[in-house]
Image 1: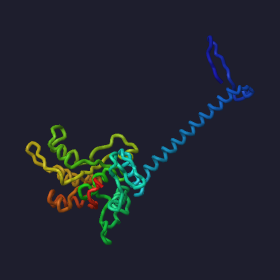
Image 2: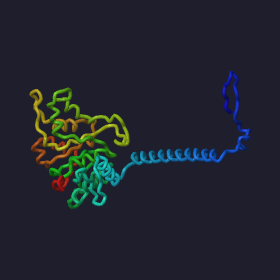
Image 3: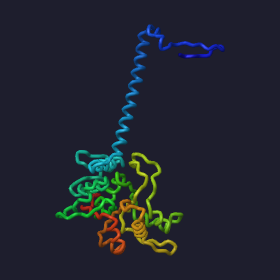
Image 4: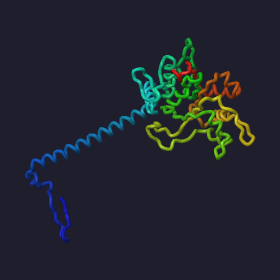
Length: 300
């Protein structure tokens, strides 16, 4: 029943459940068509909204569910496209805007991408792998360690670690070793020992959780091109900044080792010459050392 107040009188009109006399009201052809269109429109948008809710729920469930390595690799391809690249499906490449290849799976690197897909999905099969190219020699890799990816200049280490930076195991940020060392001498609050202290623990919390970071609340750290940075001096204090950061992260009992990764152009002998036997021994304890094969891919 509907009620209105008019000239200080309350008027009641409409129908009750018992009153069905309204069903005898005739509609013109245009009124009938308008009523049908209104009902069609309401049903269309109701079903459309229901489908959108269902698709969103399925997408969230898929992102939250455990991923096999194959899904991780497809997500890497997706991230390559999302960075503004275009995919050439015929060749399996991802091309930059200038037409040069920036992501490519081929005989030289497909095994490494598979290895990292296992690692970044916490697949126990990662720990059963053998060294690429070796005859029945166990790699001895562990899921609770981080990664040290070694390889020649231009073989794709940095791009690979950037593409895996959002993953089901632990998100991380890729920062240049040289830039981190340069911050040591920069004027400001975060300089000198402060920059080392900043990177001793978890790199930084993620402020807004969403599907773009897979709802993870913190970031790990990948230091790119370790061994290329120079020692720095700040108010008379000379420091090998990256070495101090790595030593601090190694010794932080509250920081899981899998939250620290690195890439380098050097082999273990070169790293020993740069950082000393003690730190390299800790590196081998903290990291799974993975050799990325191949030559310079930047001009391929």
